Image 1 (tube, helix red, strand yellow):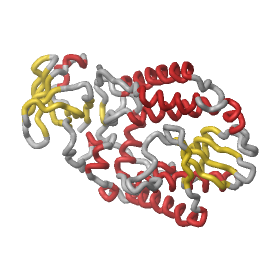
Image 2 (cartoon, helix red, strand yellow; image 1 turned 90 degrees about the vertical axis):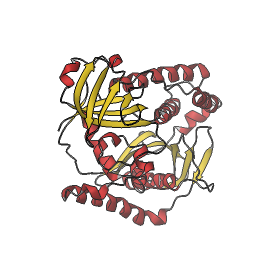
Image 3 (cartoon, one colour; image 1 turned 45 degrees about the horizontal axis):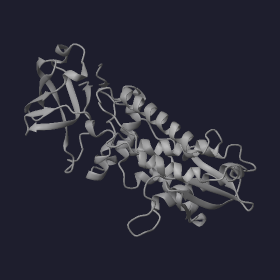
Image 4 (cartoon, one colour; image 1 turned 135 degrees about the vertical axis):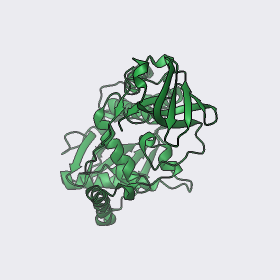
Length: 357
């Protein structure tokens, strides 16, 4: 395999618009992580970001795609058709993941419990109800309706319905809808409200209903806080301005929010110098300069703290010209510790990068 190279100088670009989901994530999330991910993703395949800790997001994407395909008529709502679509989508996503992270092994994303949930919901819907839902006068594309408010917001509305008195915005969610108190998660309410503001401003229509449909097909009404429109939109603008001001002043430290929650799911955890130690993770990030290439299966590196550690089980990666690694600065993500602070081993989740210094 060819090892992806993380450039020495990573250029950050200003934010122009935020999606509703990104905005709500930033309230407790890490703006620096977002900027770093945006910068690294420009290099495309193989990816310079961390492989995901789980493939739940991929499953959510597949379910989302199935709902959209059934709704727009390109996929029949039968068990056979949905099962075939599911298997094909899982294989396609698996190949994309392996192309993005060539060092991974035994990637499996086939969550069949989620598949049967999806089949159960969609196969029970009468075809006439699907056709009826497609009537949205004045809206050219009611499914995955892309909308942008320049300098502020951008995003795709899952589904728009017309209900005689106005328009309903429908959002498909595959995760938990309610918080520990039994209320709809605040971020979901804000997201749907933002989509409503966007649709009304851009299309000149009236939104009178917001709905979440979960993985089991339950319909959950979401409150529409039209009276809070000015306040919420100002918060979006302030968030963008704060991020861009930090980029202009080169004060990126001000955007870092390091804690176990943010760092635990950060796609750029492996190259952040402010990362928190993850207490529950059995896997390690090891980086340093290669000091010895023992053979095609094992190398030693000197870490930034001066420790000499050995990393094994590399033969399966089929690295071209192992001897050329001598003197290179490597970053290993997701290594298993075999002997504390001395010996580490590659596993199926390990990703490997060269970092320019």
